[in-house]
Length: 288
Image (cartoon, one colour):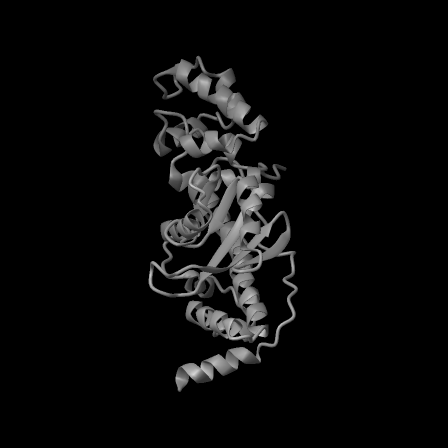
């Protein structure tokens, strides 16, 4: 019994010039599923490609890029809307990231907290304490996963740390879920998919995060831990959402063989001691 392929990347041809979605499906229907299959059958006149030498060179280049962990090759050649296919092969060097800001006017708005999950470890990076310590993670990772990050998180990071050379692939889940027929912010998508947050965080949103930072700035030190915990909840749910999206997109792709699904169970814990009563305090202040 076929247990499924490990990843979709090595069965993709859509990054080769001249091969679009319909052509890729025709190739799969012919039983040519892998890069190796294409190499072995490249002279088959029934394969619907025009420049066989070009296809062969891209297959060789794809193998070399995978062997050398050259994610830039795939970033430059895959259509952006198909970047999701690349993730499983490089998931050990995928950085899940969420940015919180102080909510001021654009020219004064700055990052307050960055939450990350990288190589199985949650971390928080805090303005005025260790914010710049996130740079080595950004430089080491191959993929960055965010929600609405292409419009929000990534531009703030680039401006704050003067990082303009993108050595990574940006996977923005907002647009991936739009493709799947979902719309709304991160928490709206979570609700639509039945992902529940802990009761003590259900009423916390981006505005609450701004107020938590203000509390911290006024020497309410516990507010920082609550803000960190909220930010990391966002990060944790990015993993759930990406795995759900990947599995659904694989099914929509109608690949001839079963593709091994990604686990939708979460194995890491967020361990931050907090007094969440400050959330009730903030909610009362908002109402008044």
